[in-house]
Image (tube, rainbow, N blue to C red):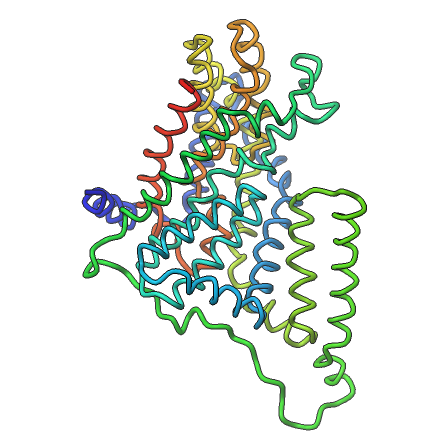
Length: 437
């Protein structure tokens, strides 16, 4: 049944969805037009806001690039390759591969969104080396696990409202994670998603004669052998495992202190450091590290060119008040029970234009918090509705798929047909739990 649905969806997406760079240009022009039409902002002011906002995500863009590069370098080490291949052997059929990659991606994303993106894609490649399975569905399944991140340990909205000094503290106080991340409705939602999403992805597998496979030669490590001629002193340093091993141990020692003595938690910078120092330690020599880097950096072009445009879009949406209008429109038709549902939908819509959990909460909190107070709705549930809405439409937002696609060697159009169906089914599940559980 689902095969019949995904087939035309995939064909339509492959035919009509442009490259993500073209998509972000069209999105930029559309947002400029909407801001000029529906807000007091003039075209010149809109362009000025856009131009000034282009560089607001430079730090984040560098973090995303390093997540991709460091994660790739770590997976390209011999020991990690062996581990991923051994784990992949747990799956003995295409169906099992889809189920396993979805679950691993969801668990990793629940811990940390950056960790989940990289691990899901790398594990999918390991599975593709072991099993002949539709590569598009496999990567789409790996990416789909990302949907649970905002209900997990690194969710920016629940962590923000649980932190002292957050911008809405004077209105709602501190909301402990027991009321958000570890609330009964969020845990039920996570449990349901852990069952529904893997089964949905498994059901999307096309018949054998319609599956698209990947050339396994493209999935192999590209480690280069050491030169056979007599090494110069400089080359001996470059091929020596001592320097790489030493700095890798120092870096891992710092991380051990951070977690064990400092009681530090996972965040994006720590994930990058973990991937990077383990990669250096396990590669050993500078030559192997740099060879792996050259392979890894090829997939980062999309991140470098597209993130400034999304930063410009976010600036227009926030500073012109367009995002606030979208959120307020949904909230105006809400009741105490339906407010989480409409907050979820509005967050999903705003997320297409403002693909940042923290940034989106800054836009929507001034709208949904007064509405929740006026309607006497559960503010913790409304906040989590915004969080889940932000995560939900990531399924069709190329912005977040870039690291996964870069690692997998695919284009957005290869997986978005499957992601559309995932969007519909998971949207029904999330909205139902948030509204009625």
